Length: 212
Image 1: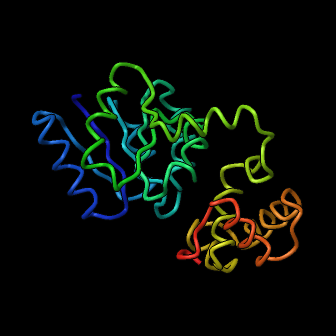
Image 2 (image 1 turned 120 degrees about the horizontal axis):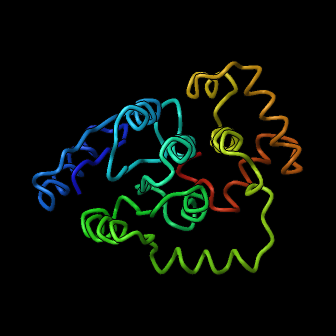
């Protein structure tokens, strides 16, 4: 593992991860970035052996960055490292092209194991993720699984109680764009109010009560 690109908007998280990586790969070149735009830019400009990325970052989200990375360097493995448990986003991330999904709480014990598995060309999948993947084969897609990446991000922010203005600022979008996405989200989920969105998101483990 010669060149690793690490993306997380919290510097103390990056510091801890770099220490874990350096202990195992002392000669690796590790570059850190703090947002999705910088992540995509680095992938566009340089060659990497592995990307480790958070999902929640300013501007371009981890999901959006993942989609762009797969277009720029389709064979570049991306390990998603998130505070969210596997049942919330792992299947969506893997379907979007991630090489693995790891909860940050497990990083001190599982990060190197995940990387070594990815190095062999395999996916890093926990038993919990494998169970979710198998279950998803037998289930019809839920309405929120039909949302596009940008729609899903806006849906989640709306469900967390963010206003159109706040979402526009967070995602660097025009307010009219956010409003258009909101209307389409409501139509696809057959919902009417933001309160309905919040109830739906909690019921499907997309957000927790703590995030409201």
